[in-house]
Each structure stands twice: as C-alpha cells, then as structure tokens.
Image (cartoon, rainbow, N blue to C red):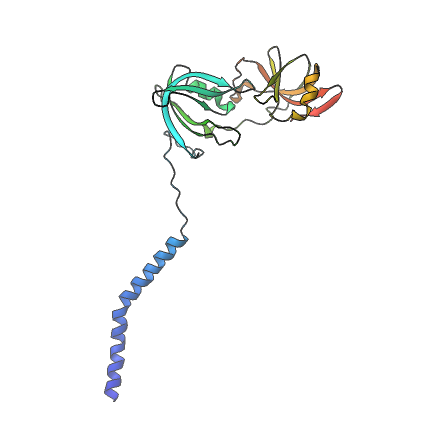
Length: 246
C-alpha cells in the first residue's frame, strides 16, 4: 500500500509538466484577446494631398484631387476674393471656395492662366453646398500650400479706431438681402454677417451715418476686387442712436 502511494505521488508532477505548455498557450491567447478588445481602433487616414511636413490637414467627408488651369477668381458679397475657377479635363469647369484671408497666398501660387493641382472637399458649412479648397500646388514651380496651415486673422484687425460721417453711401447686400457693407468712393465699411439685421430697416431709410471703425491691414491676406480700403465697423450711429455691431 505504501508503494502505491509513492507511485501516485511520483506520477503527479509528470502530469503537471505535460499540461504546462498547453496552459501557457491558453494564457497567451487570453492575453491577446483581451488586448484586442481594449485596444482603441486605428483610424484610416487618407494620404497627404501634397508633400508637407506640417500638421495633418482638416479631413473632409470626401476629398478629390484634380489638375487644371486657373481661369478666374471670384468674390463674396463683401467684395473679397474667396473662390477660384478651374478648367479641368476630367471634371470640366469647377468653382472651389476658400477662406478670404488666404486669397493673397493662393493667387500668388496659382495666377490666372497657370496649371495647378488642387485638393478639395465637400464644403463643411451647413449653410453652403459646394467645394472647399484644402491644398494647392503650382505644377510648374512646385510651390504648394496646405490652407489649414494659414492662421486666421484677428476679429478686430487693430485697436486704432477712426470716425467717419457718411452721406448717401452705397449699401452692399448679400444674396439674401442682408446688409454686409457700406461703400463710399474707395472706402468699404464691412459689417459682420447678421450683425445689422435688426437695424436694417433703419439703415435703409436713413441717408447719413456716423461710424467708428478700424482699418483692415493689407498684410492679412484679403484681396478686395476693387482694391478699396476696407474698414471693420465697430459701431454705427443713426439719428443720434448708437448701435454696437462688433
């Protein structure tokens, strides 16, 4: 009886040794499964549209790359250039929007008549349906620019205010009839969209206005199609009533 017990005791370590590799495999598989479950998904990012060492450009829902000749530049209701027209072999003639403060840079890279390659996407604005420029490259010079790398301008361009008295200025409106600017000779007084909607009837029936405004600096990247001096309006006074509009 004692010998049988000894044999059993000697056989137990042999069983444990034979099962140990299987146990190690099971533990490793369990660890792999747990790692896969808790590992965050890796997003599939599109390739950079152009050679660039800076930050990743803003990702749009759909992106396209097309080559064509710049045929014209277009402007927004404020008379600032904000779109280019491109003649392509594959997509015909297309118009692509961009932020107005990038106009000086874009027109330097792709002047009218030059061949460029552009990356563009669906316009991210809920109010607009169209194309938004992401990057541009001049096919001859190789100069390129990703537009997300261009910093936005300040809301108020400087702190040096000026006073103006306007008599019978030209009112400039957008496609919805909203007042976006006043023009007098070679001076354009810019209203931020929607900020004078409440006093639009008062503006339309008045003829004389007192404005406090600041000049938009020429080095901020905007291009006014008439090369007017552009001022950002801070307040407007009508019939001795002053309204802050910035």
